[in-house]
Image (cartoon, rainbow, N blue to C red; front, side):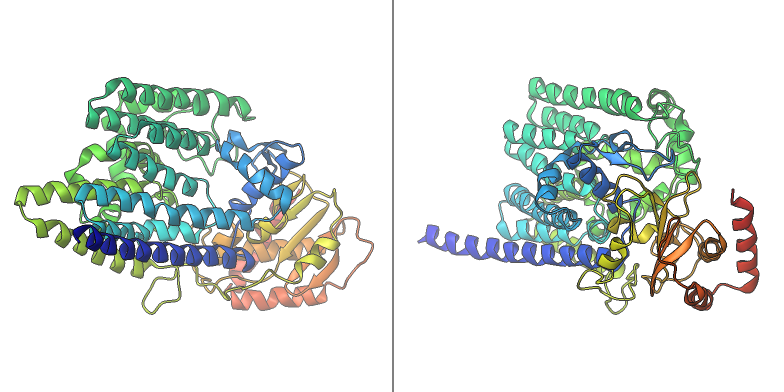
Length: 544
């Protein structure tokens, strides 16, 4: 009788969680598809992975032309995303960026299952296990990552959650499978693997296996970011350390080479920490991470070991974006913090010797998670931040895209506006507009805004029109006017708001409607006459 009752309690709880995971998957998938179809994706994100997979399928391994060098390079020199090879067979079936949206939504959603199993094992309760799975799913950092373009770190999340479950259950084979997958996803995950090995050794006192995993992770860290990636890079070092454009270097302040960066962190830790906490807003970042969990993970610090790599990467970055709750960089921390909080709750509950303490703290954490998730939700909910504020939730791909592609020669070099870039990256030469290093054969622009976020005119303000364009809107419009005045180019397609300009255009179209559109956009985008005049002068000065 007791067994039958237990079975009845078990099945509904798991079914409820399965339903929640499926709904969450649909939500993330819709956000990913609508983002791309609504021209809110970026050539710098989704476009890079699309070109890398497409290039590999056509014999140009991990092709990347949208870079600071102005020529084709191997994408693995920027990020070691070797697992992208798994998308090549899918592209052979149908070369579409939608595969990435599906993969990201699935990875973030399915990771709730190992979180559920871990919490159930720790607290011996399926109800508490399900609550922690929901806490994981509603974490604001996770939802923010799901609202971005596809990024490989999201694929690491279920493997991190699976590795933590393997440590809890003492299943070494499962741990090794998860760690092997992590090593193929991104370069910093070698340190995450080493942290998992240390966790295994400390929890189970099995240092033979623990040290093996640590050595595997350490060897990966030495070989991949230390040797392989610099060898593939035209600059001879990781692009995040030394960037030829001088704008995207995140760790250049730590040293000019990977070995210098590691040396400064190891031998001058207090200098690094002082700078981080004084200039990089690390305290606020840690507060954001800890708030949904009530800081409960601090009661089980051992389980935070796998988080050290990404915490260091995010806090040491000179670019503030990795520390933003609206960014995707912290997504790999969510399963680790969740697991640590699960153990923290058990430890605190044992101190109070109260069965209800665990349920109370879990419920409180759930309430705070729901509240914080609602506040920063990238959705049109009353009172929510709704950072991206799309002009429309595009439910289908743009029907004009086929006509635009039809007028672009197959082997032409192409410069394309950043936020429409992923629609055009299945080519051998694609650059971000405006391209100053080469003069492309064809230029494709989309003269409109995908968002209602017009101000501020700052490309680093996430979600604004400047962020989508990756340039100041006044300079963007000024550059288009100068392009129309350039005798080397002619308009050969104008389907508002799509503009195609080409060097060897056989069909020339009047540019008067385009100029009228530019005037309209100056008003819509709140660009003053003074700001536009300054931008126009700057663009003319920078022209070759």
